[in-house]
Image (cartoon, rainbow, N blue to C red; front, top):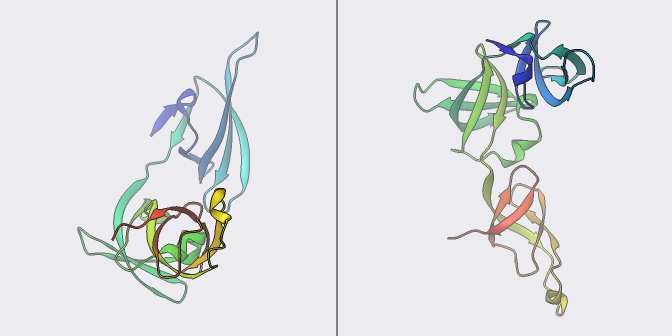
Length: 188
């Protein structure tokens, strides 16, 4: 769909020169003389190449139509991760490159949001947090509780998380999937 360049925001996906481009940064430039322009920094979704472009604010650009569907993660086979649409029961196998580093947090039955363009998947968004059990943690050292210090721990999927001193092996914790950080102790 065509939109005015002035309406472009970071996070929008544009169709530009036959490619899908993710807008990462915008600058509105209003010179003292002449028309205002918008400078847009974009990243090619498929290749990761960055580019910058400038449009007059009145010009129109093509905004990509993206579809988002909630899908349930089923299983992994090699480098392929299989998801199922809960409404149509249609299954889709996605390569590891589409998921990136977040594959370590996938759990059987987890509901994720799959973003696609004209039927081809672009990205997978996991839930904001997951509950995992601590498998390795350093013992508590007396006197360390005076300051808000954190200690390293390894959770069941092998990810290292910095946790408060009172967390022990076997404790179930909530972990943020975006930055691998400790959120809170899981409620049983």
